[in-house]
Length: 333
Image 1 (cartoon, rainbow, N blue to C red):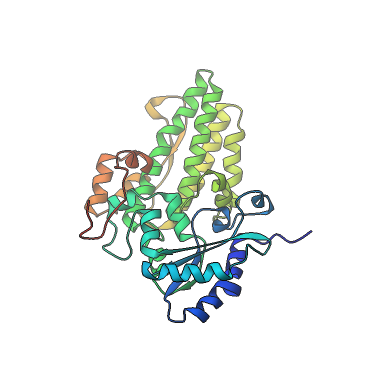
Image 2: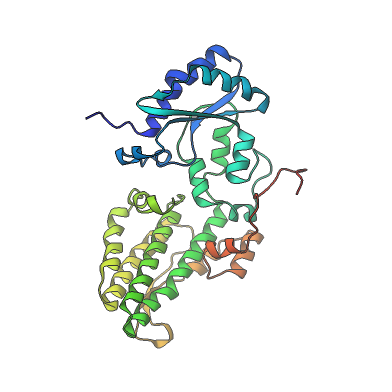
């Protein structure tokens, strides 16, 4: 059986064996970048033989500094590009870096730093698609732009961590409350939502963008500490009664609390078993939100803390306008 060639490797070979040499020969003074970015499991390195059943290409993106050169470069590539390369159809697109950033993120290259509001309007999966993949050649600043959006600014990251801890605390209590009235299905659903939020917390703790649902668990499995946490998450999901679910959540919370304290981004936070409103449901609690918020000085981030102290970032994004995120000075509104 023929070895499956991952899409990233196929893209690299397409550039190194064909596109790169022809651009060097016919456009020796051309400043450009070449990469595999954007949509597709191959960009994240998760494609496999099953991925070949649709949309598989030997794909490459060429970025130019100016649109005036696009037509000549496209003509050169079209002339030499075969229909297939490495057993897959070929697809090479030529664009300016400016236009690509506008289309994908709603930003423009290397102008003023993004504000807090700008960051909140950026889609996390799109940030991942732009910063994942690989750059094969760079003369127009593609790596600089990827570095610029490699992860959230420090104090905004602290806010995201704080908000996620706030989501976890009151929801733990609801696992028991739903189960108490005989709604084990509802309790299980709340437990599953908590597991998803806890995994999101793991991505935050590792300063990694989380992918969309298809690769959410796959990406989590590659995070440091996933081998320890995954059995605890599965115990929550497999529990058939709310007391067992509660016990599994407490064990999971304890591990996440230890990971949070190990980051050293706030004063150490002790944890204890508490009962909300004296109800018969145990919740492991530590004031991570308070400790994290105490380290936030940025006025814009402090305003978020005041307005949405217990809300996740998805709640904040709901109130933002749906538009390109930010513009260069002088751009029309």
